[in-house]
Amino acid sequence: MAKPAKGKAKVKVTKSGRRISYGQAGKAKDGGPRVRPGTSKGDAYCARSAGQMKKSPKAAKDPNSPLRLSRKRWKCSGKKSKKA
Image (tube, rainbow, N blue to C red):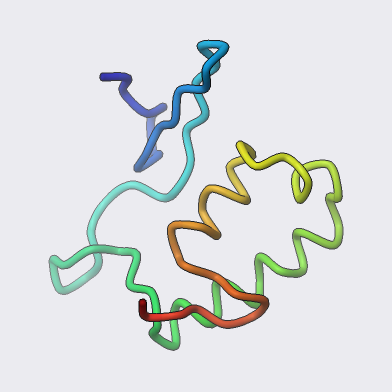
């Protein structure tokens, strides 16, 4: 199992062997998971990252970019985060 880079929460290893680390490591203030889809925090992240998708079209097209992997983890649909 690959270990994420320092300060990152997750890692994905592609078929070519490339490691992509993404997401902020650590826990939320209450000790629960940092990523909670379907919350106002999730909506704020999705809205913010939707702007990043417009600014960097190369990352927006690559399904293995950290931006796309994080949006998938937050269950972003446009500017909203879905619970399920």
